[in-house]
Length: 260
Image (cartoon, rainbow, N blue to C red; front, side):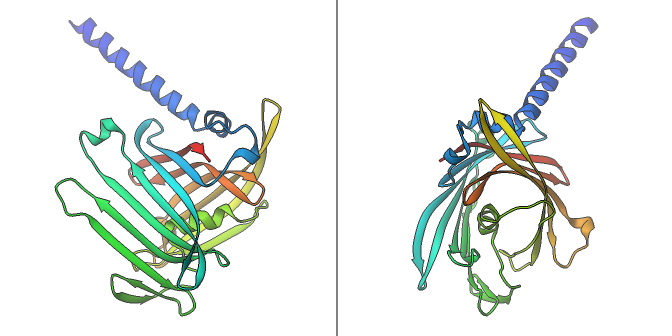
């Protein structure tokens, strides 16, 4: 009986480790480019980006789709309309069925947020909804009817990603971005560490490695959440290939699975 238990434990451990190793292998820029069907840098679009979210490098907990709906008119300004939707895998949804959608209006000229909203639906609970309006000239945000001061050039989380995608990188270049969606000012710090060239089937891809963190402006670095990003460079913007986030409960990896 003991031999059977030991054999079963060994088999479970072997399956667990192989699954973990395979998950780590998939979090590789070269693998991501090939798996996403990106033939060359110019075919990596940003109209619709779909990402796979994994916990501890192997547990698939959600997919996230970010769609750029193009330009709209908002309060007399041209703005990009971005929509992010969370997609829960069927296996996870059996235990915890959650749906989320967020929307951001990004000023075409300044690339900062004009409006941010989200809807979060939890099992057996009323949907949670919120809307934030940003007055970037007066440095004021209005959240559910309450006005608060914000820092210049404040972003929401969606617009911050959109902003970073449209920056030019060079080794050592730093970005210090203000984020506020809940009346707390956060600092999103990023630094371009290096770039590398990846060759796949004769095609060359330039990928930037970005390191940084997110933390509240009024908190010390001890409270920071560490972030590493790999961005594929193409003419006019970059496409996120992989984002790794180190949280208090373990590492999260968000990997591109398709772009268009």
